[in-house]
Amino acid sequence: TRKIDHPRDFLEGFTGYCVTDGYQVYHTLENEQEDLKIAGCWAHARRRYDEALKAVPKAERSKSLAHLALKQIQAIYREESKLKALTPEERLQLRTLNVKPLVEAYFKWVKQNVDKVLKKSKTHSGLTYSINQEKYLKRFLEDGEVPMDNNAAEQTIRSFCIGRRNWMVIDTISGAKASAIIYSIAETAKANNLKPYEYYEHLLTEIPKHLEDTGRGFLEDLLPWSDKLPANCRK
Image (tube, rainbow, N blue to C red):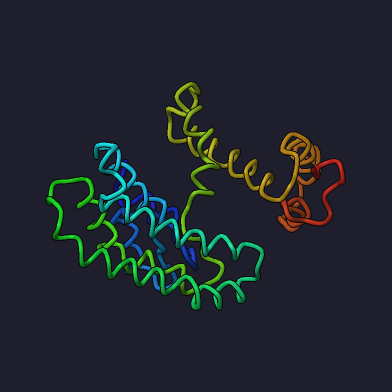
């Protein structure tokens, strides 16, 4: 369900930034947890204008407010894309110089135009979404480690979300939790340039050797970023 209990339980003890859509529950949790900061997702902000543009006749699209909003967000993304190879410190510095002015100009423009469109229109929905999420959409400007959107996470879980309709074991809470663990390991392996099949084979070979151990220190050598993993696990 979409009850607050689930993200509250999942994020308990988490410290740092969490990049999310505008779901109010995340903002409530930020107020509850001292070390949790919610950063907004620009892809979700952009998506609303894209939907609005589809409702505008093609001949009028280039003059629409939705089109102008998309152009401004595109400019922000363009400047941000130039900073990918930099360190977080360098990225933050250049974000302040080159990206922040574009973000500030965008929000000023949004506030100037929100009353110029019908309140029940998709364009108005896009404009008000940005206004309501301004605090969170600006969060990426505070830290060079924080991305503009959560696209990386959404792309990672896409195969899981598509496949779950066909996997009977995921119709239970326990099945869903088990699947989440398996997928988390697999996707983290990919993110660390490992071959999932070989990595799982290594885990299933090594872990049984430690079933009698009283501690879990051996797991450090098995983590996806460990330099002690065998070469055949790496891409």
